[in-house]
Image 1 (cartoon, rainbow, N blue to C red):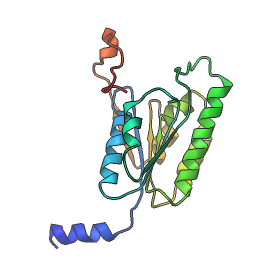
Image 2 (cartoon, rainbow, N blue to C red):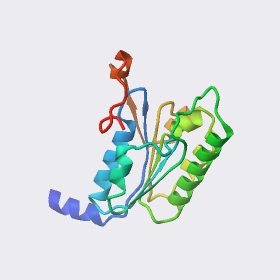
Image 3 (tube, rainbow, N blue to C red):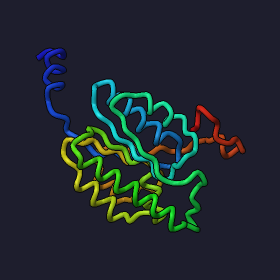
Length: 186
């Protein structure tokens, strides 16, 4: 069988979705998920992204996403960073809304790829219940690719996932006092 016929057959096969996790203390988790978005859109897949803990701050990727067809996103949270030692009720409420929106999108039949950006952090910081995230993963329709990003991925989620990539920080400019740079880090 030639590569050409294999590709033709593959393109007619319904998508078999997987669960992917991008985690770790290194840079690139959201970037990896957004790279998958670009690839998916190039093949006419429909994408939904929910941003946890990322409110009205001017993230560059969100500005670009508004210009792309077949991608929908929602963001929940506030401009100020969440303090894990002092989580506010309003922050929990926003994260719970984000999880509900992600669940609704995943089960709607409207999307091929669903991304829960920073869901691992939201669960680790107790903004949402990890059991709810586990239930969402288990309820995933077979044809939906589900991507979870953020540091601190719970070992139970790692066990459920089909693909787990751990970004390891070897060196980071933050350690030398360099702050996030517009257009490159947000």
